[in-house]
Image 1 (cartoon, rainbow, N blue to C red):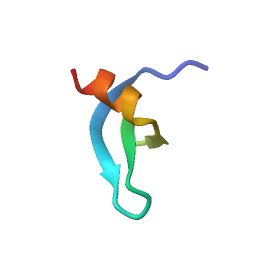
Image 2 (cartoon, rainbow, N blue to C red; image 1 turned 120 degrees about the vertical axis):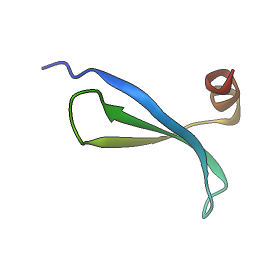
Image 3 (cartoon, one colour; image 1 turned 180 degrees about the vertical axis):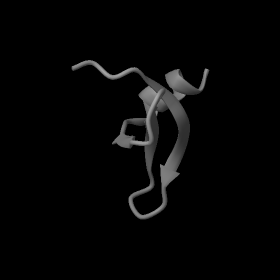
Length: 46
């Protein structure tokens, strides 16, 4: 089953000082945090 998602936010995990992107379902309530690298965070932020 495929689930449509969107980027909810892009932030920084304070405990590890690592960028994290928060994805959320378009028609739901679930969220998925994904820890990423600085290069990926810069590309998403553009």
